[in-house]
Image (tube, rainbow, N blue to C red; front, side):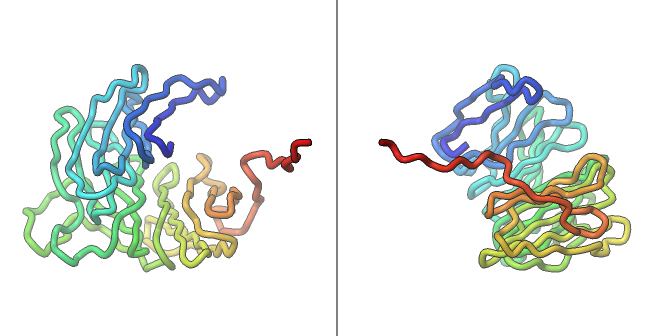
Length: 259
């Protein structure tokens, strides 16, 4: 939330299970470890933190970034957490030791253009999809296999064409065969879907009513949920990007003036 609160809810019971205050400003990029033992998130004090979802105890901390940490994701085995930040870097931290391991993005001055905003991991392997201010979704490998050299960007596996504005949202589908990215520029949004077998664009959809800030695939892969500035959730057909339906996620009531 906006004032440093992390909440964990029982969805079936609609019951608040845990509320934890961790600061005084907005929390970003909450993610579950696949083993269910940690919840990670980013903070505008340039730190990444992780809590025990049962007790709320802080058990993970890293101050490796130089600007706001905007999103987090855990590795397949839950032994590492990966973070992206306004400082234009993607960083790898070992969960057990809380040790900063590596910059996964290039450290060469000027190689990166703008901050990184969103990250997601391939469902079965440690490959990382990210997006940010330069409008280009990119895929990186998590583990460096080459010696670092100034000027390299050796962990980069794939760079996609630029979208209008900034990429605020990225997502893999359940089997990793598709990726989606959503962007925003000048009050308009765009969504693109790519096939990861050949990295070809499958479709793109314009959202003229407002920027796109969140995308996620339905588990069965049949649709993509898209949400953004105008407050509506759109379900798009994964095959062709056509609108299936759209709706407001909250009930809007007309205000009644007091007598």
